Length: 261
Picture 1 (cartoon, helix red, strand yellow):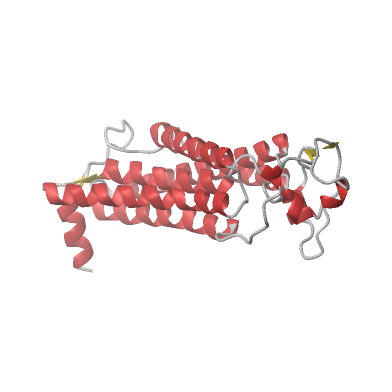
Picture 2 (cartoon, rainbow, N blue to C red; picture 1 turned 90 degrees about the vertical axis):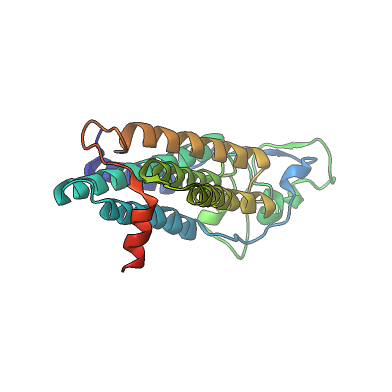
């Protein structure tokens, strides 16, 4: 299955619509709910930073690997690169769209909701089991998107997007690199482990900084893993592909090529 530019543009428009136009579900809160009374902390990794890194690194890797392989004609190499990058970006956009749909559908309050929105005055009698059906989020330092964002806890976009990008990269490298000797095989496994751990870090920071509950982060990890596996299985050209059938790249060829540049 091929993913064209038109499909990517449609996904981009849908993401913009869901993110900007649609309002999240407005849930209330119980005054004795301590889980949403955590302090507000600034993001360690912004969404813009995450998307930039999560998109650029796999794209560069695909371009470099396929050009080093040279297992088919130049025209086919361009086709492989085009289709695999489009497939990756499609999965990234679809992932982000699913995140925004879930956030707006559930409207789960973030752990720092009460502190960020200065909503303590809705509970004048202190901590009790009173339920506040509706409240206004007021913060003099933050406006617009941030006030809406306080209802975007479920599920973690940082966890989902970073995991998607990391797992896609691992699956792609594993399908295109073939170690010739055991020591290099272990190096490759260490690289995969490093990528996996790195992809978990953005989600961890979101939980640590009270932007998400652990269940939000774990859900993001799971969806990122599943979406990367599905995109790789059904949309990416790899070994034994009936269309192009690119061969594995021996690691000694990759190393000798890069060292000679």
